Amino acid sequence: MTFSSLQFHEIMYGILEEGSKMARNKTILITTIALFFAGTAMTGSNPMKRGVRNSIGNSVGNSELDLSGKVWVKKPDGSLSCDTTEEGKPSKPNGELNEVALKDAGIKVHKSKKANDGQMRAAMCGIPTGNEDVYLISEKDLLKARELGFNPVSK
Image (cartoon, rainbow, N blue to C red; front, top):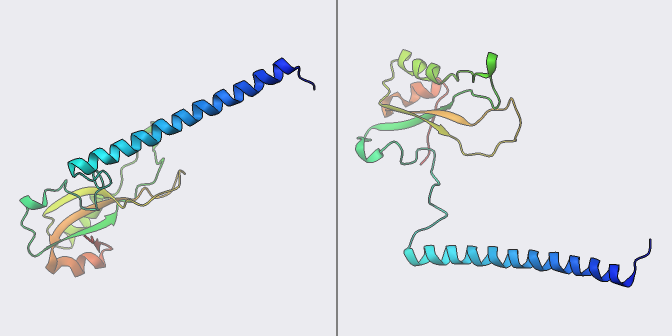
């Protein structure tokens, strides 16, 4: 395959033009990121901490609860990714069974919520989702809860 001088120059110009566009886009991206972090540094907010929560987070409103003598415990809810039943309806995770198990053991649940363990998962059907049921119980019931497979939530 042979190119005329004009064709060669057109091809090279196209390559250089695309390279120039990519360089401009990269410069714009870097500038945007730099301005974002500079702006957050001036306002005193930390963008890396915003929206990131530990397994308890602030959604429970710990300040409203009397946490003395109480502990958060968690257990996976058993849900699987892509898990569906007939007609495409999501299957019911065993979250209610976890709370029933605690109550059947004589453990009073003061507060409950859903959470995620925050670990990365493969994009694949049939593996655990990492969703957990989290319960606030009395510290005196922690041993019984551990026997049922619950683990204390670390802060």
